Length: 389
Image (cartoon, rainbow, N blue to C red; front, side):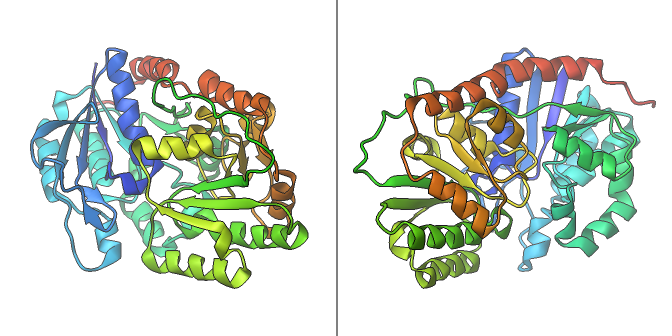
């Protein structure tokens, strides 16, 4: 089977969805699926400068074809990733593929790919990357309502199936009244081989909380800073450190840094910037607790990466993997509000035990291994109904 994956960006600054698409294609190829990836050179406000344009290349072990994204001065237009050359190429090569697996909504590459596949009679699968939940639909709500009425509703209803990564996301799709088959299949994590679990640390060392994510209001970093200020007032004698890894809008980042200073926790914060590769995995491994009080996560790839590193997590119920974490004893679940988050952080003012770290890694290995997930996805591909001509 020949499958084309389409995603607006594989830029690292776009976070989990881009990383997951690359890992998914790589894992499918290991399963014998002839999977390739079509995208743009988008990398947030800038471009992926090293990515060849208009020709196939190997990118992180995956066959990738990228086209140039339009770069207007208006941020909202850049975010739409208008890429006519991608549409022209796909129109000419659509029938070279048995199936199109589209990642994301409300973006030109994915919208155009679904419309072309729908009109051309090629079955397609959509992974909405959480863009159908209430929080996401409320952002730029007028534009999204307009796009749903104009074309995206038909694209959604024309899909052979909608790929959701959790039961929570499945309920969000049902709430929209979409009568489309759902494929419930989580994402996986591809971690470096031989990454050891961190050794138990002494009581004299500060507890390391890690926030590793895109710096965006959705992730509720401001709430985490407020909660830690409460913890410091309650337990001034306990040493801890918040390590913040990620990039985002510079103005938002500056506001968070100023908030930390005003709250009196600025001296406990370490702003690490964007991390990837070995530096990211080492930061995850050495953290005591990974903290993400997000307002909405249809999956939470960074959470699963933390688990795979052997680091227990402290997350909000809106993170879709929360039930799995709770059942496995791999962390704590609490509302993403200052007071209850402060209570959970205060309970975590200690280094995790080796047993807690092993529970985290076991959960990642047993439920979120790409080898088993890719096999299930390949089977799902084979069972999808073929669209009528």
